Length: 154
Ligand SMILES: [Zn+2]
Image (cartoon, rainbow, N blue to C red; front, side, top):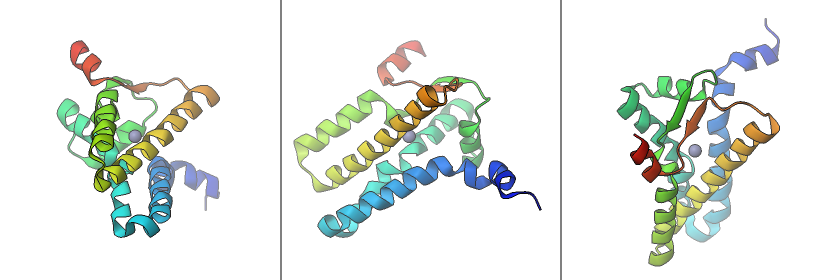
């Protein structure tokens, strides 16, 4: 029997930790909002959790990778060099347009979607700060922050 930390090190649990943080934060926010918005609070999950499907869309288009698990593994592989990836829902253009649409429409569904989006982006930002500033890891996989810039470059 291997010690627990060795099992953990190579297990799927560790590989999925990144998703688990997003998932748990969505559950917490949905619970907080539940008294106000009832089951509509579950809309938090669309951009709070499933937004990362844009990594998969990019893999389908760019690398013809249709296998979702393989795509996820590659994204979590810290040795793989993949610069300037286009994760469409993480670009400034998408974020600003969506938030502006929400503010101008005052639509309750859009508001919940935007709350999920904001939560997700804050967590992504914290994670990036943690990796770059605290752990000082070199980022072998990066993504573009601007759709316009990406189109010009590619
Ligand atoms: Zn993300």
